Length: 301
Image (tube, rainbow, N blue to C red; front, side, top):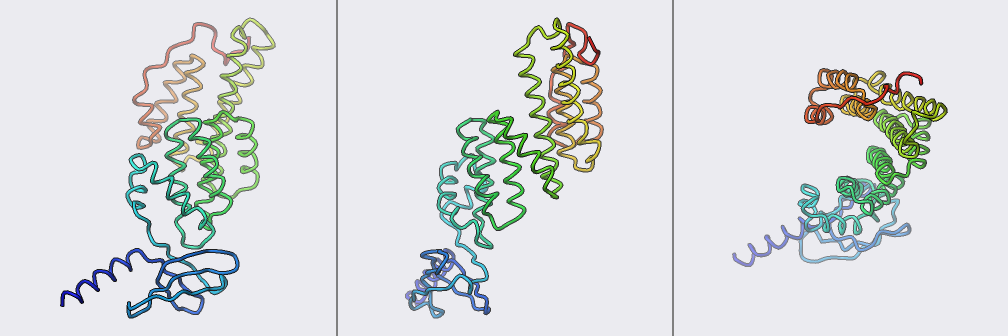
């Protein structure tokens, strides 16, 4: 009896850690994958009676999809990535080779890793996020994850201040993609990049008010930035989170320009239209805007 119980427990433990290969003819094989390659898939199959194993070589075209076994620490790393950063990276390095395999969750691990890297705000981690996102966007079998990875790459380029690349990619996506979320993300990136260029212009020309040419260029940049932010909630108002982000971006532009009344008006709009969003929370916590000490930039010099 004790021997049978031990065998059952052993088999249960093995089954929990097994890969499951679903074949085109309907058969299902349980075991451990040894190699995935373009010409053959090698696995050690556990026999149905649990009394042994056999090594099999399978042509890839006979395989419908594979349920990959969960690796040690995988569940914990996906649930709490900040607390398991190193394990998450190890999981990605081990599973990224399976990105193109249907049913593989390698892309999901990559997205969680990318988001964690971007959350940290470290340029080196942003570079890692960009590399991970680019690989998921090119090779993952899941279209939703490919789109999410492209959005993450745009955010990484912005975080790295690689504005020309971010704008070029956003414009390419805006002209070629039908995914509404991806198009909205591209629009946000264009607006945020333009805002960063406005900041850079003022840094490079601190006395822009005294130079008519600089004042005219600054005014043009200001209006272009504001228009890009306000266009998103105008045409995509049902996408609450991103519309709220865009409206909060417009508030930041007004605050940057010292237009305290306009900033307050847009903040009220944000809180009224999108009260449950993260941007509304940020707006509610922000200190009051301070007025400019000079003529508002919305008026021509």
